[in-house]
Length: 387
Ligand SMILES: [Zn+2]
Image (cartoon, rainbow, N blue to C red; front, side, top):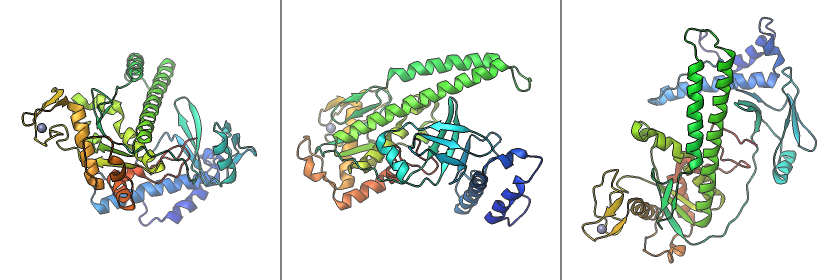
């Protein structure tokens, strides 16, 4: 901030200077590569801030100072994988100790045979985890079923598809949420205004709340993955609404249910499985999907509370969400260049992934179908695979 024109190399050099600083002996304890990695991250944060300024983004994202860092990233030194790849030991001055690796035989072989370039230690509410990124092709095939489906993401249901099948939001999430609320109330009671550092019991409770958050987060993710996997497995083409969740969350009446439903995560995994199994996953523009009649196209105005679609023009009566799902499917098929006809058979040929439609699906699904290069998770820009 003070010296203009500081370069990336200067940062690296300053890492070595810091390591000799007697006032902050902990810096010396950290592995040299890990020091550099954190300098790189800081550099990246500043660089992308400048890039966004240049691009004129509305959100500049000024880099933040991190007081409580929750992760350390190692490169190729400072840690050692045991020969049978069952444990990983950290060898630098912090003595983080030995971590067990829980994975299946296939992944273990991969880890043994591939070179790990980055290992990250992350703190979560319930302990410490080691994460690493490996570049491996995930091969898995499923049969093509010849069926296509449109999915409406709803509040009444988690999803409702064009054949009328619904998936209800699981109760366990609501139950965990109750537990979370209770724990948060307890925490609020233990908070003393104006007291520095707070009491021991406050921090105990704080950790408790953290653990519950973590559990809810994991349950939600697990549910999203299982649902996405199931849908993509049993259909050749999946169309879903491209909802702008961040915009909808601003509407506070809906906000909680929406975030809860974990739609975004769900659509990301749809893209992942689509890519993995060579199936088409399309995001379609959501405008008027719930208003238009799926049979004749007449626009029937509805409020959020109208649950049934009744068309005055052709007389169609259908559940509101199923009507929307059919519209979504139609739009999805239009995007990939196929036509909708009202039976489940006959789609197999029209929806067969050819080179051209494949490309469209990638463009339409955007980043959700990023390259499949992790063993168990899609790699987003900032998160690497967690084993
Ligand atoms: Zn109609």
